[in-house]
Length: 70
Image 1 (cartoon, rainbow, N blue to C red):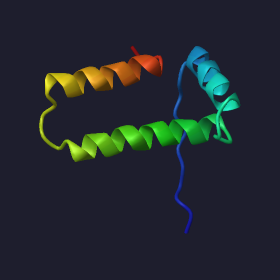
Image 2: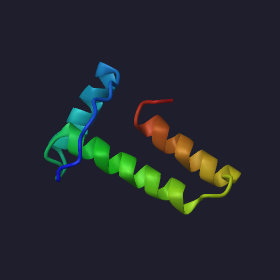
Image 3: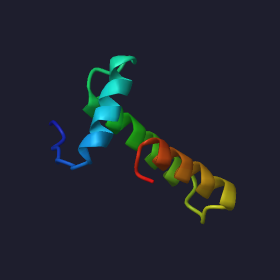
Image 4: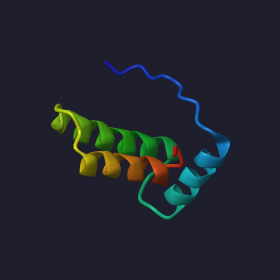
């Protein structure tokens, strides 16, 4: 059985940046890239079920900034 999907809205300028990254990578679509990044972040969050230390918080903030969220 296929997993159901949902729509997530992101700012258009961020989507354009994702499209540029996808053009120069092995990803087939912006959606594939976004799913990959979110799975990576969620995997890291699950590994750290404790409270984040300052270095870990800084790393998450850096990744969110690189994605255009901060």
